[in-house]
Length: 248
Image (cartoon, rainbow, N blue to C red):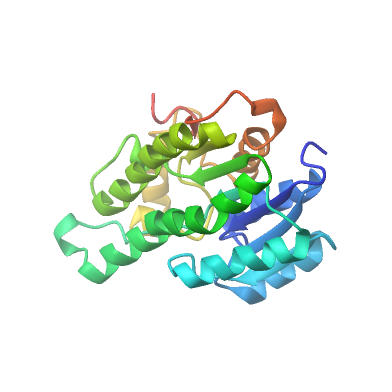
């Protein structure tokens, strides 16, 4: 119960890594707002987790929707302590010149602008609480990029850099900012990363991970629960690689 009584927001919380984080936070005692564009899935998860969990429909690329979702969370629970910027998307694995402008804009809107939106909406509430934690979900793609996902790689590189910059700027407010960089996992985005989800492509990718498997939502959730807890009080501006050694 290391998050007992804490009030947390998890974006993209209805599936993949976000769902794993939401489930873990609920077990650790957090009061939880699950933000997702799929309100049906978010509502079902919130009902299954706890009476202290709510679902809020939110397109994280839309400033007004993020602002309103944070306001609903604060109204329901009385404050805000933790924000997990997990929602993400990618273009398909393909040559960089084959990615359309629309695909590029969507990737940066969901992966990068969303953090801008959330900072504007959430930081004032964290300051009023006397501090808190912002956890950004990046990717090994932003640390050890590979061809085929160039623009996605760039968006996750931005997540890693802004995590460090935010951490320095918000430290006087006692707001820690940290990130997790998972290797590809068993989530809805896996086929997008691979280009095509076939046994051959999976085997080729797995051969680059020394630990020999993809990441799981449980792997990311375990790291997230530690990083947002008081046990990590001296950790800020850090990007934690949950990658089975891929970035070595």
